[in-house]
Length: 307
Image (cartoon, rainbow, N blue to C red):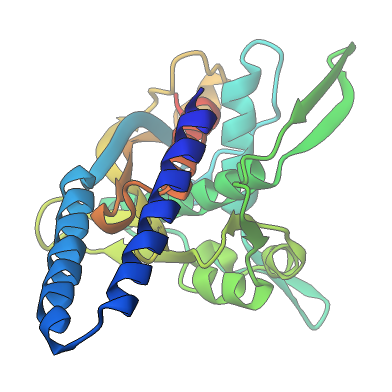
């Protein structure tokens, strides 16, 4: 029905337009110039105003908590093997341990590039920067999709993750990926450089990726992953510290030997996910698609990284 109404309306407009142009052409003179220009100006202004009234900037926001368990003896995330009792938590912390030990090979020797924090402030910054880097990897994984299959504690398992990329997505250039992550200390690794050089990271066409650090000059320090497409959207994932628990307490559901827990400290963080959609393209079908994509991305990140 909507298609029929649109077809009738367009046909009527076309007939009316042809009749008007024919009549003006047959009776053209200096007397007709002023009213024609006036009508065109008023019509254009009316159309512009009618469209602008319907356009509104909009935002989508969500937040969740997450944590990092720091082995204070090593000055790095606690190394864990995913276990059957809490596979999601131990898998997430195991990924932090992998990313939190960046290393390079120099003259046949493996050298860890990250330095052990000297005080509580440096520990919070290390954990926040590490969560920023894990966020980036989680976004890339959700955008790319994939599958895994095998056995877990004697049980067969397989999962398929459909990519979240939008219809007009493109693979973000690898050289720009390397430039974007260069400011994060955990990218200073042979393995990580190899990953970003060969990774497929689908993002909406013309979108830009950046990693940002805001020092605690006003409020808490912030580590941000930003995705933005001019005239369409700006999406930010903001990592902010909440609390350090002191030695011993661990995230709920995590069990380790008491002698190990005694030199571990849990750092808790808030991750705020915020998307702003520009007014100028608010009525575009692409904007609606980006809103749907953003909601799926937010949900996937909270499921993957939330405590």
